[in-house]
Image (cartoon, rainbow, N blue to C red; front, side):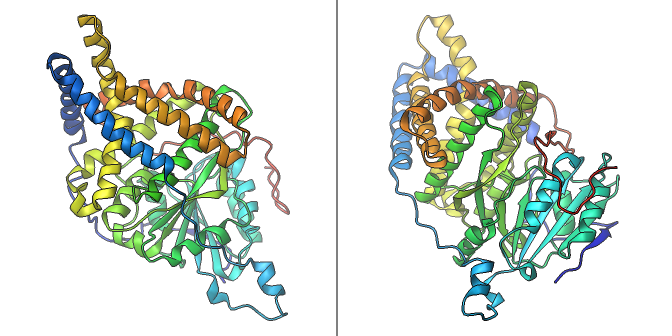
Length: 466
């Protein structure tokens, strides 16, 4: 058992050398891709057979997306029996080797409003206390987060607090890299500070690592404050669609992706990848590519879900989604030479191409397509492909809401229509991010979403007042 303690680490723990060289020149690459996509769009308008090329691409994309929608969901392994049930069976002490050792990592910066609730849920997990540990990483907080964490750690035997100095670098990736080499777990779990973790989460997810090919598992994310306003309801639908889509991609041997909050990573896989990349603004999306490129799979769990606080204002949503879009695009620029069937396999390569096409390329091509359509008084040439994507999004959102929220078809349909309207912001975010990346280099720093800590319950036995 690990004793509760306060730790201050002055130097990062070294981890394996980066096995993915050449992660530079993003601005130049982004400029080349932007010019290429715009010229390709203009060419589709000017070439007599351009519209036939679009129709052909639409047919192939339609076949792939239809395959996703109709693929049966994979039956996941049954969870572990549960701590209480195991101790109650026959009155005998259970074999603790049945429970893999788990290390939970939480990187926090100025999260005093939510961190107490998270600690309460983590120490209440239905898992033998001897088999899991919690590392709370304070990245030089200035709002009282550090002092609160120290008080909570003093009361719990398996909680450790690490304080980073104001000179520490690498953002969230740097914070995680500083700690995970010391952690003892064969499974490393990462939560955001605003996570609301169900007590049976470890029991339901850890058994998936019995499959040797599983390098990581992503748990479905849900919006805790979904009923607040239009923006949070839109995020609710977005998250339901994303989890469903990821699960279906995995079902056809495609790409499963990490989403940061609620990600479980096999320690061996993390060592293979060299830890988290500190030269990216989205550690989870970057690690997704690293894992797949080193031969690991990432299944997605729909139940139970990890809840998090959705942003309630458009300004905050805009900044958050810009960061997500830029980080997601960065990884294509970084690893594009490696994204081949020889390295990934045919299924993953095809899946990745089509989702790059509909997530990044198509929104970037929308503006020149519209400009050429107006100039030539003709319909946009990409209309067939855009219509296909909109149909897939609508159907997938309804199915995702039906599965995750157990809603009737009518209610799911209404929520999906609202979600579709909400999703239009991506049509502005994607081309804006692409243009900015081509014109201005990104300065890497810790970027976080402010959390309000709605209806924050006090941690039992802890004094949260100053």
